[in-house]
Image 1 (spheres, rainbow, N blue to C red):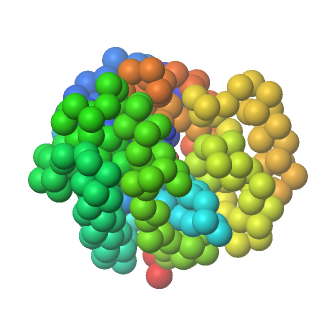
Image 2 (image 1 turned 180 degrees about the horizontal axis):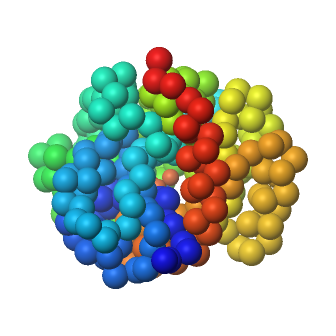
Length: 277
Ligand code: AMP
Ligand code: ZN
Ligand code: FE
Ligand code: FE
């Protein structure tokens, strides 16, 4: 029986490059006990994978990555083990995908005024029906020849506070926690060292956060060790995953983070005590 899980990965339903069936093939090759697909603002990839599972496959954990705002900075909240057929969750995600759509249109307008010759259809094409994000805008900027690489599209135009950057209308952390809990799930602060979100751990713990992601490709060992102590200090669970997007270089591959299966067992015990409201 494998001893590891990977609770953070993306598909084409958000900004991952792998379709659900491609991702499932990769997961099957990695000796995992369980995995969670945690697309941004979508559970479509997770649902599609659920329908493809065969006997003997690793266990699929329902997941999602919700964008939240604290002040003017972005914070990602992972939700796990909630009712995957919840109407409340579905309604919230539909509304956030519509907001992402409108935001991408505004970014395209800004880019055009900066002389980048793309249109919204290009961005939509790269999103392929999934939740539209900056990676799709970056792809369109790159493919039209305005920059020499995908990374440069961020650097020159759409990185946080870049000239064509448009902030998302996000959840507050309170609302994200309430939504996931209301659907019987648990919440985990994603990659706390990005945007210095570790500064908010105590505040989030007071709001009812359940855990923090201590295993993540952006972490050095000392980050993981420090975050483990922080989790202990505030009575939080620990979790982690590869944050696999299928893009070379920037993200690690499925299974890379060696997240012990025990992390998931503790999350399940907590979710087991929660009811859908
Ligand atoms: P969005 O949720 O639409 O704001 O897009 C956020 C995603 O864009 C992140 O999950 C990353 O995949 C990607 N991203 C953000 N900043 C950068 C950057 N500077 N370089 C490359 N990718 C980035
Ligand atoms: Zn992403
Ligand atoms: Fe994230
Ligand atoms: Fe992610």
